[in-house]
Picture 1 (tube, helix red, strand yellow):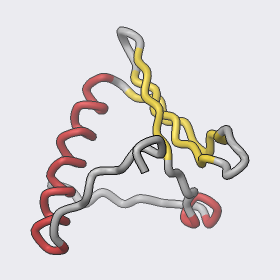
Picture 2 (cartoon, one colour):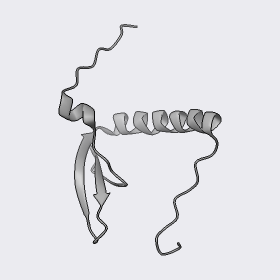
Picture 3 (cartoon, rainbow, N blue to C red):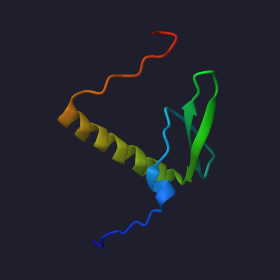
Length: 86
């Protein structure tokens, strides 16, 4: 297998903070909106990813594998508590 070389510009490399993800789909695409909740209410979308169903499924599998590895090393990740339950 050939090694994949990724190029990334400085602004993208800095990343964006998101504490909310919204998902939607059509027959041919998945939409992943990453947003930052604002203390005064509302949220600002900081990034939108549009991908194929095949890539969305591969992302799900990869994320599950990485969470399992993380928890093996660092312990269980607690489930988020809804604000109305806090």
